[in-house]
Image (tube, rainbow, N blue to C red; front, side, top):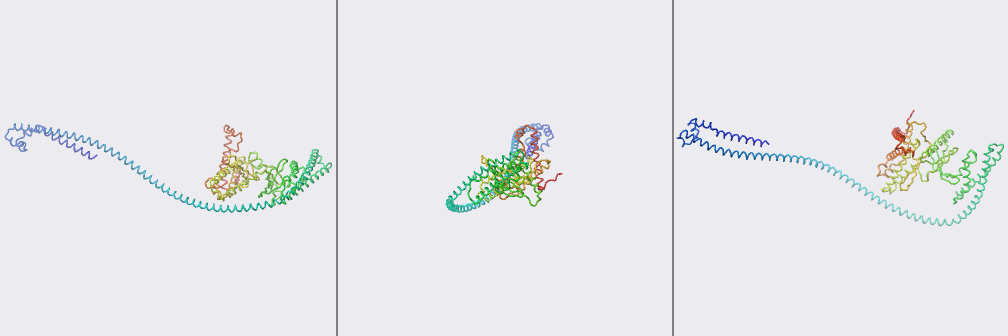
Length: 608
């Protein structure tokens, strides 16, 4: 731009000089003044040529005028040429200006393109840096994959070796099974020889059975007659007066005792035959069962009528008891309870006497705990919680007859032990078994949370929620998905919500949850659990299992308290909605209390 302005300034100065020169040449007054100023001056300037020196002034004047005209014509020619030159120069200047404008626009465009290219270059540099970082990450990932591949290869080689060893052991087991089959054939051949003697013994036993059947019918008819006589005497209230009917009542009791002693001897004789490893048919035991069934039903319906009629030996002869387990407070027996038409298996819980305690204190504590346990179990049955049914209560012998949950039911502790034993199996690493185990664990945590929610939503505090006091029974549904039946037991330390404030009730529920949490954490095998659920982060630690149980507890706490009528009207009944909000507030308060209990342990808060 500066060069262009300098060029224009020089052009304008040149034009001014040309115009000034032309105007000075055309100025006639000045020229006449110069011509008439004197001859000497003209000669001095060498204006006139030498041939005109002899001419007069007028002639010289004419000559000079003619010369001026010629010069003016030449000047006009020069001026026209100069004007043409100036016009061409102006056209060139205009063209140069347009060219300069185009160049300026081109320069601006190139500047924009350059800036865009520079920004793209920066982006490409940044992208190149990110690509290099990603390339390094890919290299690292490649190295890790290579290490994993090497480890998998080593594991596969190890598994091949294990398969070979298992194949060897399988072949050995097959050889042993063949050997056992040969021995079994020998045993079968030896047992065929004893079949004849067994049949002979069977015939003798059948004959004895017929004889006992005949005696049974006679005894039952006699006993019914005696019972009718006792009922008649009871209605007349004459047996309460020893002066009038004491001798007859004594005679009836003596006849009953003789019948019972005869039947007990028959039972003892049959038990001796069983102890001698003789195979008895099931029908032989039916000889004494109907009598005891009738006697037991009458005794249970009239326990105060004959307080010393049935001794402990006779009551024990009613059913054979098998000791299942003994704890710190009671013994558990498995037996059968007989009815007039059927028998069914049951469990007897017997609270034994504590010799280190005073007899009165021990009897009082046992009575209170038996009463609390039976009441809480009946209340659980009323609200729909799955607990063993209470069949019979014997206060004198400190026994409670409960319905058996199932032959395949185990405690929660034994269930997790069985799961831990699966962790040592060689085929547990398969994905199918791991997924099945994870599904079973999720169903179990959901069932446990539902059970705790059912208890606490009905304001029932168990008091001793350990892994030994929860029974687990697996139930297979028709859709091939395993479900669990969770049954709580041992309600001896339980309590209910009567007379408790909301704060104390939430405190007791939180302590109940904390006891279960500590029992589950201490009773689980952490290594086995992490091995079983390797690919499931929400199941491989006891804390994650507890989180699932608490989540199920929170979800089921409100829903379990509603009955069918409230469920149908919960969307259009303001009172029911308020009840739902209250239950939601309760479960939040319980979980907040649980955090406080975790900080201080099992100790309860001392409230006023």
